[in-house]
Length: 281
Image (cartoon, rainbow, N blue to C red; front, side, top):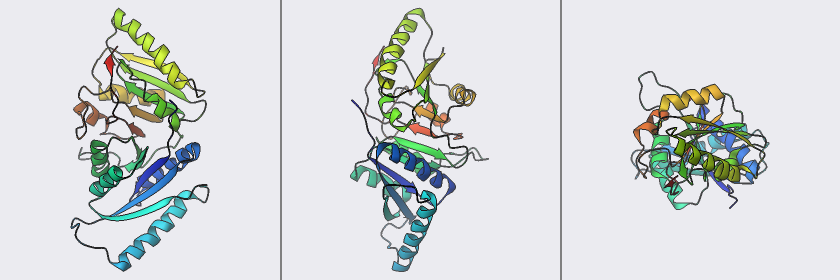
């Protein structure tokens, strides 16, 4: 089934990472003729408190001016601007549960010297508690608009299904690097070859994309190994698929996945909470 992206919410906080999130969301929206929803949350720990009329007008003016700069008057579809107040991740999560969306695009922070959670607490809470795919954009780096994608997974029947969604983000003539965490026994090697040549080819045949594969003898994702592979290949997007973690459930981020999120130097498409089911190949 051909998947499409129709609704893209983009939480914005006027940061550099949010600006990059809007920029890439615009490009994805143009490819898919999608609607962008800009969601700005004025932080207020006292959710019963109300924003004053003056503050609301000021925020509206700031959002409009910032949006004008971000769009550069090239966006063909009119974005919908939504304002709210409260605890950012709680407001965003509630909005996502009440409104249909296909892809969330949001900024994430870069490396911190103290080694603390580095993607940002709001982004972390959003990926934990939502089944909608989330594209996390770092504050720095070159925007290559996803010409080369690293698709990380394990060899399960159906583990290539997410490629049907990923290709909605990719340009024509893109390259997909499939990174499989799997032991290299002869029997499993035959199963892996079948998986790649059937499911991957089927998913990518509707776009002009090449694909290569990487195999690792570890059945468990190793963060440093995957990060090195991304950097070595020059990929501009890392896709974390639902089959990647040993345990995958809503509200939980597995340790091996948390390790991957600690050094966000490039965009990450987080698909872990998608309701896809897999069988061992």
